[in-house]
Length: 65
Image 1 (spheres, helix red, strand yellow):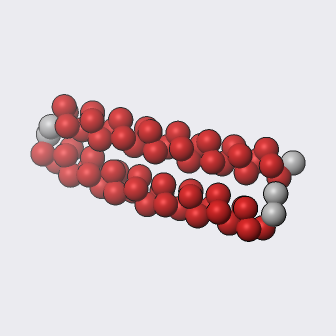
Image 2 (spheres, rainbow, N blue to C red):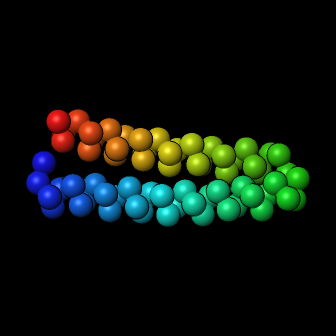
């Protein structure tokens, strides 16, 4: 994998993490409001973004070997 391709994957990870950090802050706010139903919806979004990060990281690991 070329340096340029590594940087593209790393950029995608960064963008995904940015979205996910916002989701974590949203769930924290909801926790203070004690709204389990809404918190569950946001947790689902966090899980989805975490899966993207894991898949991108796997692609880096596989391609670097």
